[in-house]
Image (cartoon, rainbow, N blue to C red; front, side):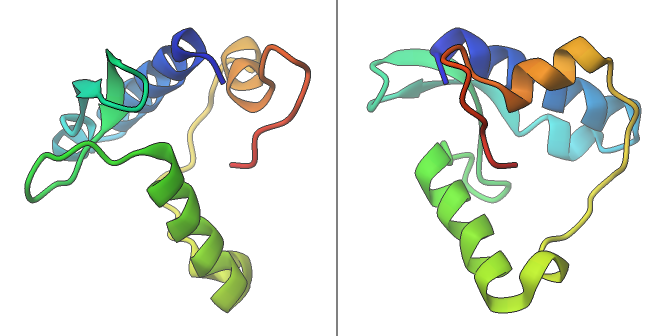
Length: 101
């Protein structure tokens, strides 16, 4: 996923969180400098220390929960209507691959 695609995804996440009453959680999605990407980008951060939470640690956490408990291991924060084109941009990357969500 490119930096531009990531920015669109995180902006969508922030907007949906705000629309559904999760303002404090939406506030954790903001511009931070990524040493890996060597640029500022919208990213999720720790609710306690505000440190950038990278894609790999978040992905590993989700996979670990699914491996241990199946889909029930994941918490459902909200179910929201999302415009099709915005959702497809999240699921499909530029190369035609599919991102696991």
